[in-house]
Image (cartoon, rainbow, N blue to C red; front, side, top):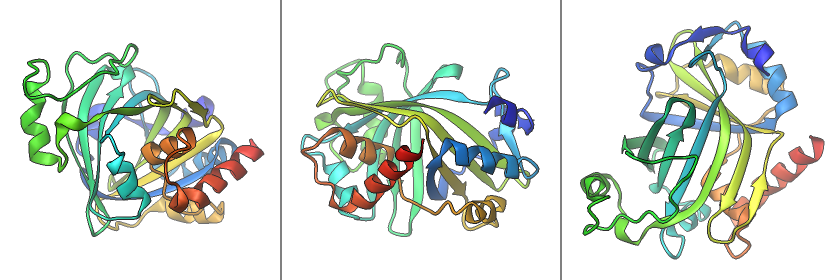
Length: 262
């Protein structure tokens, strides 16, 4: 993978700062890493690869919160619009940690709001974080959460964590970002179950609106079709057998089929 990525023209983190796409449309695709290699070879003339300290694959860590009755998961599983997620996202290589609220509105657009998560160490994460108003350690996040989150933050606890490597590509017109996640592993903090999806690649096309995209034709040529894939929901469905998963069954079967080819 590193050899293929080295053939891309690089783009720095500073250059990426103008392509945040915080109010965007997302389209996801799931495929095998072998198929991903073919896609990258096709895309190298149209995209630049983000490079940080000489690396073009960055390590990420995420922790997801939910209510005691898993309302965030259930709302998504039931297909409701206007859903939200709360997570800690850590960019491990660069040492950046954020508390993030993601909202998907009724028009299919995703908005992300975030604030620095200070004193968080993804290599030794604190799984007991609570956003209690009387707790001085987290009072700084109270205003942020009550402004952007529709849930009562005091009842939320961490349910799921994952880690993965991410490749980030930008088209040369700088109208879109393509993130590609590999080596995806989940750990369910409630059940203790782990799932390893190494061998799969989760591709996400992020555009501000419906700008023309070079990658869509390449994906069609490789017969890689759009497929919704929430990491929190899929990880939860794979590691917690008590959760309802009717609307995720087709995606879970696709994951099984792709893993069988690895």
